[in-house]
Length: 245
Image 1 (tube, rainbow, N blue to C red):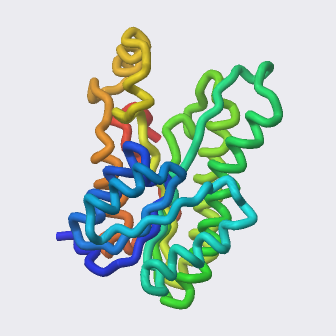
Image 2 (image 1 turned 180 degrees about the horizontal axis):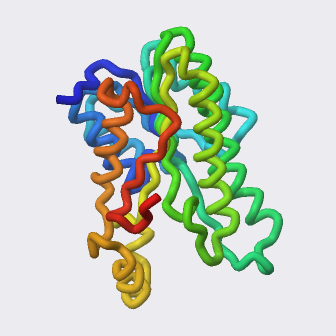
């Protein structure tokens, strides 16, 4: 049985659907969690619901303050850090010839640059512990490409490659860095999709259904646990068979 009791874990993007499920699953198995996001009302709701959750509002796009964020989050957890879950991310879709520089840059900055910086400063904390786990949430389209998402797919593919490099650098320090690549998951975002479009997506999934946020949370828990100690620099695909590498 997986046990994360008393493990100190930071989760970014905690106020979304997948983030909520990650928080709930980690809380259920005893982790100490620092939930971060930009929507304070949703963060407060998490704090109220789970007694082992602390919260810290932070906009991950503030790259110059990420060092301070990791420092403050670690202090909230008692001064040490065992795991970091990089779940925050955005989309700004457009066809390539219509995509402006700001749409490109904002997605790259938040989805890729911020993940590098949070990982960098988290690793510094983990080196003191002589162990740690980082789990980066990517996307199936980072492996397949997708119409109108040149910025998003580039950012997610970049996270995969970056995670491999970090994993090589710090494997001997007992720090594991892996990715989870979700397929199409039931969230507020997919709820807004046109039914015909949703059916077209499902037709491409061998499991013939959308995933649940809990499917991603289960994978996060596994990669945070000792059961994944010999897994490093890998991507765990959670997509119902939509992409088979």
